Image (cartoon, rainbow over all chains, first blue to last red; front, side, top):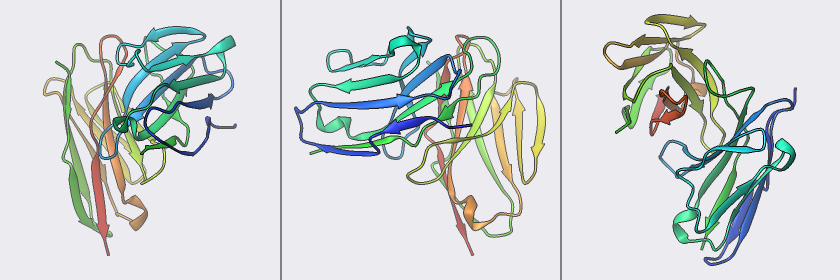
Length: 116
Length: 109
């Protein structure tokens, strides 16, 4: 079974530039998550999708971050414009379902973003 | 507020046993996860506990006490490849994962 795919793996940009990340979850997984992980910290949930609807985006800085999941499969996360503090690893994860019960999250390899 | 506490860093010797503790305070509780994360890699699932007690899986075991808001991950017969960060995460009443900052485990020969 193929895992969660993400691209690019690494990205270096200058502040105020724009950047986009792509995620392809495990086939059949209804729920997709985008996390931001700053070095030395645990993952911070940015947005959670169930199929193509948003379940939780309470921690997404909506003035600069946006995300979409068209057709309930692939997803893109965009930052426009980037700030120095956005330097982090952006992890995408997916799970079969969400809500009640046990839902193991499977993570992609992440995109390491450096903002100069 | 919701909070997960775990030690920042621990050091242990190859072949030994180490216990990584985690305490949690969440609005509601629907289980606790442990994930392993090697440097520069994504987290990978280790265990899930929702009932009190010890769950054993090979060299790794995880314990949960719901009344104390406490869990630990026990690693036996430590190998150099176990050097990684170990993330504790609790599932709250909305089934959202609340993550700890992770414990960096350093294994010495």
